Length: 335
Image (cartoon, rainbow, N blue to C red; front, side, top):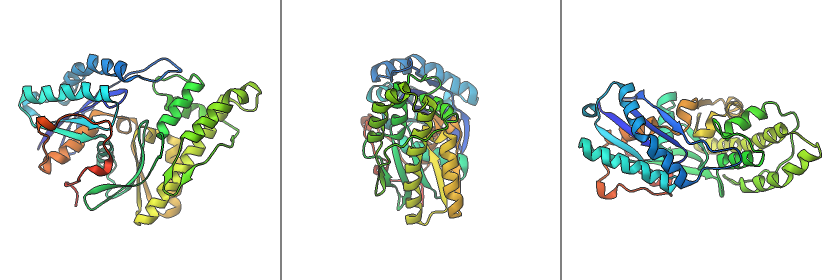
């Protein structure tokens, strides 16, 4: 019954999780929150992570009821993500692995999301919509790889939402995307925005530039409210995501869809995806904010799968990489 400790810190969330044989024993997390109208810089984010990571480690061990002797493997996010935060967490993971004399496991962040989604929901072989602040991909498993069927050709959907939140000076607490979602519920007018789907790929930079350009003018003239703009942006970008996901499901003959990543918490996106799945006679699987948003347990779960499949990361190869595609990893733990 291997127990794996997982460190995640690729963006503004820092988490330490413990997983043993498909059960999440602990999953504490902290978020680096910046003032409204601002984003988070790599150096500042890394300093935040360094300040809290040891407390989180102790919290995870206490919550799980395990000691260092009970841990079989140390997993950490190898990438993709922001360089400085990734490094700050990898250094701790390497140090702990050597102090405790445990094997180390570098995990692809995106695969962490997928494996956690599969564990929590019970989805067997879904078409995956992976949507977050740094990534937007439509993925399906085939022949020991998570194949990318479509993706953003510029910025991620979560980045689009976050940057629009800065235009309206929306609070970053608990997250700009969550606050946009709440405002969108009060929106009544649909403002026409650019809709950019190119085959299986999507583009969000044009819609962001457009809405950044017109937002203040439309608000000043009373053409719409901030709530209307939040509603319109959500409806448009989510419709694009549903379209490419449905096309991938048709191509794969899939009867399951799984939403993972931080934006996957959005209830409106889940509603739109559920409608599409219902019309196709398919099932939708999604998780709540405990597991959608970046967390340590997802890295521990992917590390657990890799550990059982015989993977190990030698110390000499235990660096990080900001660019680490989902389809680069050989998925030896699945048939």
